[in-house]
Image 1: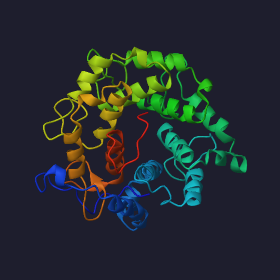
Image 2: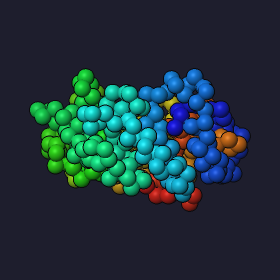
Image 3: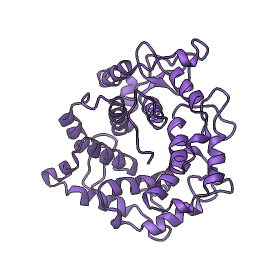
Image 4: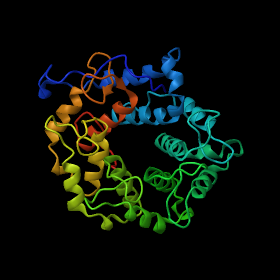
Length: 324
């Protein structure tokens, strides 16, 4: 799956009224199918460090669009397994070092296509080996998780660890209580969360922290009204959402913000119709795919999160999705 951007662009706001913009499912399916045919482009190789993530984004988007059969199952499994290293973790592509984010994508892909048992092929050690790799990245004193052996810590990695382990039914291999305590240290006065204690609140980190607490069964620790207020303020006059105050709208926050609101039961605190209108305006109606905002080039990352946002909004042409 290539992360090459373009060639199309999202439609410009003002070209059509939001209510008149169709959701072009077939165009988006064909756009995702075409991504792996662009290997002769330099950008294909420049984005190799995101290859496994790209497969997850494309695969999930296709499932949400009701076309789960589009990517060949066995080829998908073979590629995922080719990214696994001896330490049990996964790299972005064959030959790349293991990292939490790629390992999470690998687990999510295999669960989505009901192929988790393939981890037992050729002496790979099954889910136990993957769980052991993830567990070794937890700081046993603070409860935080590193992304890889080099020690960068981030609440994204903590969420990813709990997500993957819960999917493999291996949450018992880490200290969930200490992980929860670390998340609490990352909560700010506005009820939102940052990458680490005392870091700036950001919608992406809010999702990571709230989803981690949801998986751990500790949503009782969230100040729902205060956080809901901060998240609802992310909606701009054009209907789009931003990641933090004074920033531009970006269609990917249709997932990060909405999923968090859904988990704390405050999804109705944003204007649904205006947001749907904004998302639809980000489409390339001729070639498929969605951009971060109207006028910019489409890519699979924003296509995935835009479609996932529509799933949370219960758009009639998109499957519903678990916000975690």
